[in-house]
Amino acid sequence: ERARIPELEYIFKHELTREAAYNGLLKKERRVFHRQVAEALERLFPERIEEQVGLLA
Image 1 (spheres, rainbow, N blue to C red):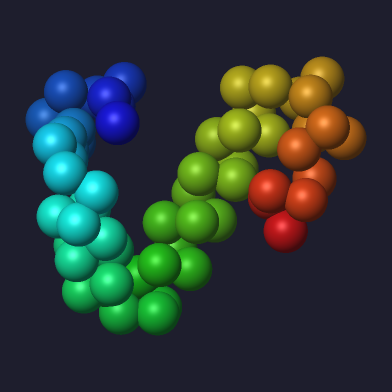
Image 2: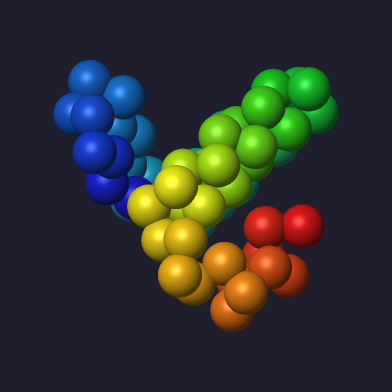
């Protein structure tokens, strides 16, 4: 994935690498990241929230 802020960008060339990194996160860290992504999506695409509510839950 590509980040809007280059210094915070992580690129995983293989799915297993991405999966290992993700699974290495503490559950608390995952919740924080998921909340940040959901808030960014709500802010950037407010007109599409109803379409994506299942993904944001």
